[in-house]
Amino acid sequence: MSDIDESCSEVKGDMENMIFKEVEDKNSMFVSQVTDHLFFEFQPQLLDTLEKEVIGFLNTSDGGVIIIGVNEKGKVLGINDADSIQLKIKYRLKNNISPTTIGLFDVVVDTQNSKKMIKIMIASGSDKPYYISKKGMSSNGCFIRINNATEIMPEVMIKNLFAKRVENSICNIKSRYQKLTFEQLKSYYQATYSILNAQLPKDLDLLTKESEYNYLAYLLSDKNDCSIKVDKYKGINRVDLIENEELGLCCIVKASNSVLDKLKINNNSEVEQSRLDIVAAREAVINAIVHNDYSSGIPPKFELFSDRLEITSVGAIPSGLSEENFFMGLCAPYNKNLMRVFRDLDMAAQKGDGIKLILQKNAKSVYHFSANNIRVVLPYTKEVIESKSNINKEYTQVIKHSKKILLFCMDPKSRKSIQEHLKLKNRDHFRKNILLPLIESKQLLLTLPDKPTSPNQQFYTAQRQS
Image (cartoon, rainbow, N blue to C red; front, side):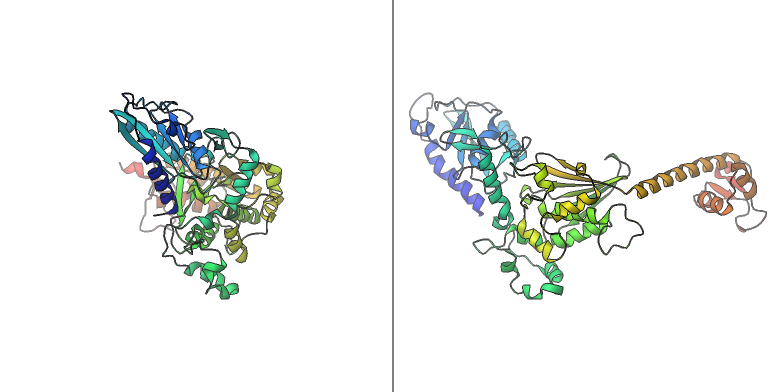
């Protein structure tokens, strides 16, 4: 059983012993000591404030219990359609609160004197501060339980809790799997850090205080479930997806290199012309991978369009810091130990330098901030966009010529007469880019198929045979 599961079980066990101690009353009134208890919140029905109350308990050191179907005085009112409401609660708590609450709560239906109630048992979270996803990590979205009420969390508390979380959160979270291997990571270190191999778990802080592999170790291991996707679209929007490649499921260093290779911005990539500024794009990719908030369970995502690359990572500018602070490189990294590995392997710039390198060739407007994500939109170089435009124009012209040929050749025509009909002077261009594609696609047929180079050769549209 994990620490989170044990915490939930303790809250559940201790509080259930108190909650269901009834007085003999036809209304099933709870004893007064329960209604006044600091760890309880009673609601007559499912309210819009549910997430707020749950967050208040998640951000405490003890957790708590919310009981739905009981009024403030402890009188059991009961609720209708409890099973349906139970499902709604689970959905709301999983989808409306950040970081992830999975494993931190339990929702059960119980009956007293034929009246149904719902108990929500909440453990203290390890990734404080928790907040309403849509409102972000701010005083509008963060709450704390004080005495027997849920209050807005002060900005200074939000900042302090976040600083503690981002400092070593993935190092404190125990890996779900303990049989981990690190052959891929060792191969990256061997060239310059061979002495690290024997003491790798200790040297890289891959162990919890209980000497078990942590989540950082899981990300760096040879096999994990961290899937990084690279999507490619035909145009400038997400309408026509032409490629969806899943990278990762391996050491995150190897996965990062796979992403760089896929985007053709790795140092070792041999391409005639990169669509992106290589230095800026490479830094943006590494930043997204290193600084992603993996406690959310969501890896960074990369999307290629016909005119740009979009990189989206989970996380936000810490409360109390401005965008200017971010652009100056003053934000603390989400995963400083992961950053250390990437710096060891010369894959990441020094603190703050990555942002500066990106902004050398791009305006600050390439960054888009939201409550839960940071998105970087890198446009392709002007030369590539112009080249694409020229290619598209040429392709359109070829299609136009092809249609004319098929209409013109309803009766057999010679190459020369076809070329003159189209008013094209360049014979090689006509033959290679217009005539041969029509022949290869069997839209245009030969009168002398056994003698393709015969001077008497003529061409006619395939429809003529029907």
